Amino acid sequence: MTKNSFSESGLNLKNFYKELGQLLYSVAYADGTVRKQEVEALREFILKDLLPIEFSHDSSGMNHAFYTQFEFEELAEKKTPPQLVFLNFHQYLKDHAAQIDAVRKEAIVKSVEKVAAAYKGINKTEQELIDTLKTEIAKL
Image 1 (cartoon, rainbow, N blue to C red):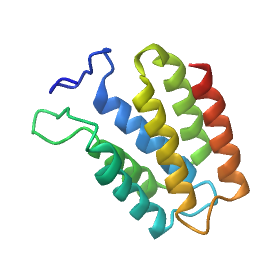
Image 2: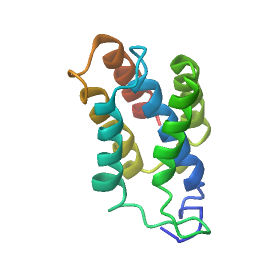
Image 3: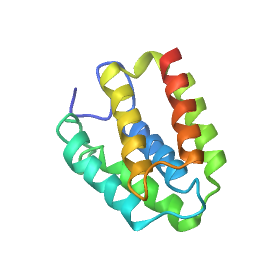
């Protein structure tokens, strides 16, 4: 990966991670509340799973993976309807299917499962979202 905002595939990484933050927010808020444990799981995922595989940075030197957390927190603060955000992520996937590599596809699924499981395991609504997401990713 390069140090600018585009990976070798041409994917705008800042936008990718913002979209991932939106997806994770939609899963965390699927039950009507974003729990502290879900926020902690998101932060842990960024630090332990994303940072070791993401080498791109923005113009200020910040790793693009942190945009996941920024977007998540902004949506949580606004209490944005999760269904809309989830649908927007599906459209993003379709629009950028050729640019999202296997490593990022795996990171998407792993991050969603970690956030969903962070508070009392994965509930029915979260599982439905995860299953839908896995189906969409398998089509890419």
